[in-house]
Length: 296
Image 1 (tube, rainbow, N blue to C red):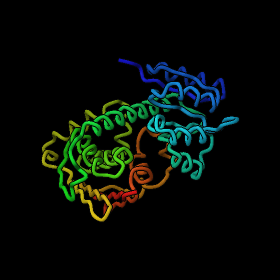
Image 2 (spheres, rainbow, N blue to C red):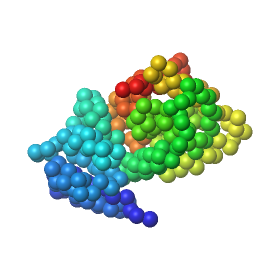
Image 3 (spheres, rainbow, N blue to C red):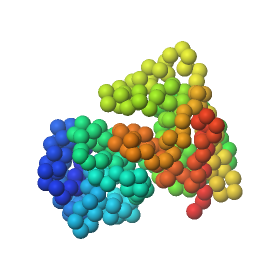
Image 4 (cartoon, rainbow, N blue to C red):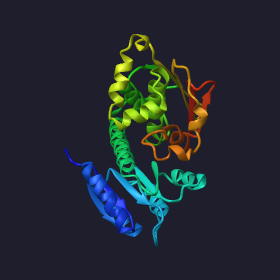
């Protein structure tokens, strides 16, 4: 199996060496670029990187300029980008995430955290590739569907349904990862009661998927499912997702929280709100969410 390819864009030689050693030990294939222009030249030659680890402050072309160029280039826009910087104000973090960064690491860098965050970004890359392949394979005429109701219970159900629902959206690639994030959230946090802290610990131990499967088989969870309703009317695709759980403090996850920016998860709802949909609204205690996207 090919090793995931990581591009490190860092003008400080000591930091670049630290990052290279950390990620090489994790089994990644590493390429270094000393500035933004060099990074873009490498990416123009080879767009197969699983993640770009990008310093925000560099002479000449800075990290945000590189990131924006990547997001404006079809061949590069789906590569996950991890920004690393000493700029950690709320406005700086928000600017980086809105520009398209998947993760935000604050210096001084913790090698253990770097490894976890890059592993999360690589998983995101692999998930996107799988979802896009499923989108291409679906031949269902979802554009003709006006209303549909679906029940999902497992992570596999979530992946299958996300691709199907995305086909009903104006831009399937834009919406598919956001749909999947909301569905997984409903299953893991809603129906199965996995807390944010528990997920952090499970992800660090590479035991998250196994724990999801274990909880699904518990007697109290076997009949739990997520109800998903799709409606298309007046140029608007509306997806309503309701789980059978006790809800969660959704208000904490629809805005930027610096304390979570270096975690290996926890940005799915925020990125869905910013990137995948035109409107995202949680109702009541948080076990129901409505996402809408309109025709361009």
